[in-house]
Length: 218
Ligand code: AP5
Image (tube, rainbow, N blue to C red; front, side, top):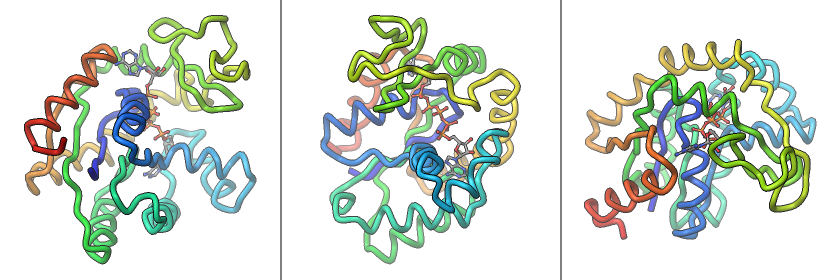
């Protein structure tokens, strides 16, 4: 199964990707996670990306495209993958088409999370992440058992720099301007399916299963 999850920041793309990846044994490929890893490792890509990410701007296409080209050539993405947060511009989408064409592969479905702004803001401002293992929490919706401590590894939870109020607003504007045109791009290709991003976790997961059944992907 080859999927793209498309939607605004905070729509729940990363959360659902993780569940789907475990359930269907396909890799979850998140350009946001890859870039954060690069920053942690002080690599040249990380150094190039950090300022853009802190401001809530998109990292230049060329940087992200190289990361994805390299990742899709790895053996464990041969049988399927979930792309989360990529593509995010028309140029990235066209490049993805071309890379997959060369590999004689195609996208099965692009799932768009149609999400209301107040839900996005509540989710992003309440998100907390484990500094050690990256597990994702929400102070109200998905709280850890002990405040500030990861259930999985006892690591410390932190708030992403770009989840602070001023940056959230910029990320939403950037999404509207640069990424939302991809809704039409994939609609025209007949690949787009829509779920509500406002649903509770379990309901959102059931929406995926329904889509997979309708499209004979199970
Ligand atoms: P990235 O990390 O991709 O961030 P994003 O797209 O802004 O998405 P988020 O991670 O904020 O949201 P999400 O939809 O995954 O929500 P989540 O599941 O975590 O990108 C960060 C930056 O990297 C970008 O701004 C850019 O600078 C750069 N970048 C990345 N990719 C790029 C690209 N392709 N090109 C250029 N630049 C790129 O959920 C959010 C919160 O809500 C969590 O706390 C979660 O626990 C909670 N939650 C989730 N689902 C539910 C639910 N159903 N009910 C209740 N709570 C929920």
